[in-house]
Every structure is written in structure tokens, then in C-alpha cells.
Image (cartoon, rainbow over all chains, first blue to last red):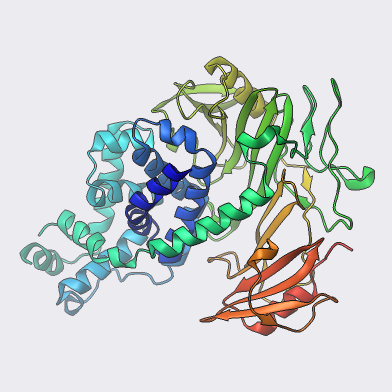
Length: 166
Length: 346
């Protein structure tokens, strides 16, 4: 299984970053990826025979996130509700804006969040996201549109201007 | 910068939150080592380590009530089912939320787990318990991998397939979506409407190195799905049980594995079940034991280890010759309180 080890070593950092963006939480991300790697080991022949093993494993991480683990991570993250109307002072720095956005991302329904992560973090085209999620491109676009609407909600006009100007 | 760039920057800004690769790799290796030691790997299924056998056409009933001191068989036909030695002292049996009424013929190793998945979409504050069976069914040179999992938060409309978009199907009067390319690497996949909301996922695939036609996988997967029964009457017998738990803790998840050369592997996750369970209780390999001598638990020697606040209490020779680890970021006294009440085999 040396090739399994090589594969894991090569792709683990990316998988962990991806899982962190999905779950929003370090321990959940580690747990999620560990579970997937154990499954990958069990089915390594199948995974390695896939046309794109890395994409295959990315899909496994996504599917696991979309099933039971997603709910728990969402509950963990959503402890603090982001304010509906944050004060402009909170956005005096880019850092504050990104922290606020992180909170908003944590509140997205999991499938919307997965689409947002795949599109804006993994930089995948909608067609690739659709293939990975096993849905139509129109569904991907709908999830993205709803997510962006939700993420914009609560940003005041001043904040939006500040975001646009920074 | 528009909101899309803000999102990208937000992700980039949080990349450093990602866990350490080396630590995750080490933890994964540990889990794999335990698995290698205890579970018959699918490719080694012929090595005589299969503990659970299912007769041809058998009705699967994992861990039937232990009055016959056997675990899990079903109606015997050709060859008769193999017998599993039950633990010397049966702990409280654990009930699965649904039962499998049919499996492909052959011998089966299994992992059965029941997990708390948090809230459902309709009622996010009420914990929902889901069940999963992962089985390796061996018949001659053919090895089929069968996964059946509740996905209570995922309606069939959100089904995601390994082999591309699915196609609608009706099985047992229930609507579902199944994979359109079952001959691919993902095998046959099905999301069937769950009677209590969400979906039931069924995956049947041939173990690499084994052969099965797409039609065989489809037929097996559909039949597995058709015979799933809600609510479950299936119970699994853990290697050890939980007793009285400290206030505020309850069982959030369990895993019971059958199919290895040694004692069945059992683990529990304890906590409030609304956040990540903070305490893990699981049977382990003796080689994993570390730490210094602690207070005896139920007549067993112990070892105790505190790693920057993550504490592990090892109860030596708790399940036959294997230790049990009680671990988490909890107070030492809480770990001992859990350990003192475990139901251990005599």
C-alpha cells in the first residue's frame, strides 16, 4: 500500500484545508478527513483505479460532510449568531469583514456551503461541481445564488460600500 | 472588492485553521493499524477470519437476542451459517434504528453503527439518530461491499452520486433516485425516501479484484433496499457496555465491528450530543497502552496519561486481554466515574 501512503501524503494538506472550509472547525475537519482516509484505504484499489483519484476522494469528503457530520458542525459553529446589523466599526478592517463573512458562511445550509467552497475556494467550474455533487449545473447555480443572497443579507449599505472599496 | 472576492479572501484567511497533516496522518495510521489487527480486510476474507456467516438467501438479523449464545445468522440453508462466539458476558444489546431483511448470499463481516446526526432540517434542535451497516459479503471468489446508511437530513432531491447524475426509481412503493452507471467504480447507489424524512442510502459494489456485473449489483442493491424494515428490531452485542454515566453525559454514537480475529471492536462517543462528543470509550490494542499506573477499576489495573489536557484512562485486560480506553478533555474523576460503571465481560 505504498501508493496509498504516497497519495495521502501528497493530497492530505489540500484535503484538510478543504474540509476546514466545509466544516468551519479544525477538529471536525480532522475527524472528517480521517474517516474518509480509512474508507479510502479500505477501497484503495477502487479509488486508485478512478480516472482522477484526487477528485474521487474530494467527492468522498464532500459526501461525508453532506451526510451526518454536517449537522454537528453546523450546530457547533452556529453558537454565536452574527448580528443582523453589524456596526460599521466592526468592518474597519478587512480582518473584521472576513471574520463576519466566516460567521455567515457557517450559517449556510450545508449543500449551499459546499457549492460556495467548491466554487470560490477550490475554484471549480459549475460543471465540475455538478459532476462532483451529482446534480445539474442549474442546481449548482441555484445553490450559489441562494447562498450569495444569504451572505449579502445583513450587510448594511455602508458595509457593502466599504467592502467594494477595499 | 465584491462579495465573491470577500468570500475568497475569507477562505484564504482561514487556511491556517486547517489541522496539522502529520497529526492527522498519524491518527489515521493508528486507526488503520487497529483495523488491520481486528477486522478482516476484504482482500483477506478468505483467510478464515470471517466470524459471521449468512446462509444463502438468509434473512439478516445481526445479533439476534443472545438466548442461543450465537450472534447474527438467519434462516440456515445450504451449508448453514457460521457461528460467532458471543462475548463471555453480554453487555446490554444495542438497537439499530432499522433492520436489513436481505443480503446477498455469502459470509458477511460487518460494522454496525448508530450515530447522532444532530437535528433534522424540520426540527434542528431535536437530535436524530441514524444507523449505518457496512458489510463485506464473501461468496466464493466474489466479494461484495454493501453499505446501507440513513441520511435523515438529506432528501432524495439532494442525492449525490459517485458516478454522475441519477435516475428516478420506485422501490417498495417508495420514491428514490438510483445511479445510472452501476458498472462504474461507485457500483450501484440508491437514495430511497426514508419514512421519517430524509433518505436511506444503499451502495453495493464489487470489491476490487472481484467481479460482479452491473445488473447483479443493481438487483442486489434494490433487493437490499426493498427489504429494509423500519423501525429496527436488530440488535448488536457490544464487547462491553456502558453503565451509569455522569450527569450531563449520554451516549451519542456507537460502533460495533464483527469480523476480526480477536474480540469484537466496540466504541462509544459520550457527550451532550449537540456538539462534538468529548469522551470516547473504546476497546483498543494492548500495544496502544501508555501512561503511568492509575487507580484500579473493577479489579483491573489501569494506566493514565495526560497529554496537554487530553486524558486517557486505560483499563487493562478489560475485554478478554484487550484494554479499554476512556479518553477526552474531561476531568480525571469523570473518566474514572465512567470506567467504574462500564459493563465488562467476566
